[in-house]
Length: 152
Image (cartoon, rainbow, N blue to C red; front, side):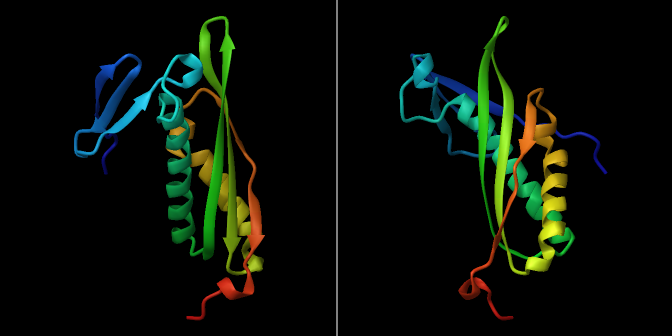
């Protein structure tokens, strides 16, 4: 088994405080700007959004892999991730990420197991583990609506 992997993203300045980034193996770039509050153009992805999105996407993929491996059946999983940017004497940095997943279970009896898996996903998400900011988890369980449960 491999013990390390490498990922490369190429960036291109497009003017003022804007640019684009794309991984070597993906041809469609992501265009971004500095945040509007830092002189960028409103309505664009920002590096700050991309970092928060990396936490969200990593959590989703980590949890779904763990749920599949443990055979936890769920109907839906949505989440919000809030990143807090704080200015300290050395400059701006993210100090906290709050992950708020909401899962809809097929079986209410799986609630404790789902909470344990959500907590484990927060601890093992490689993006969140790579950050110096504090990571908080605020999970929520939803009961499935009777018409959402599908017969096999």
